[in-house]
Amino acid sequence: MTQPGTVRVCPLADLPRGEALRVDEVDPPIAVFHTDDGEVFAIDDTCTHQDASLSEGWLEGCAVECPLHASTFDLRTGEVDAPPAKVGVRAHRAEVVDGEIVVTLSTEPPRLPPGVLRGPVGR
Image: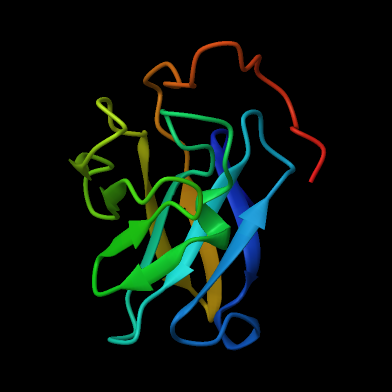
């Protein structure tokens, strides 16, 4: 049974290493990453600079580069490493439980770009 504040994402086998998955069942959406090293991470999916899906970005090690303007976010902390974004995204706890990726959502308020309201962005 899933605890409040947790999301069962998918079986780990369904998310290949080096890939990401957008989860729209939460508000705002999150991005779940399976690194080449086999680790799983989850952050808010929307770049804090402009409305871009980080799950569509480029994964390198424990960082993702935004596909729109190349800001880089640390998957472990959500902190931004490169401009133009100036604010990091929320990081969520991701783990594998019985072969399935489970994310415990952060209780911090989301950090969305100017003009973006909470809720699915229609992707």
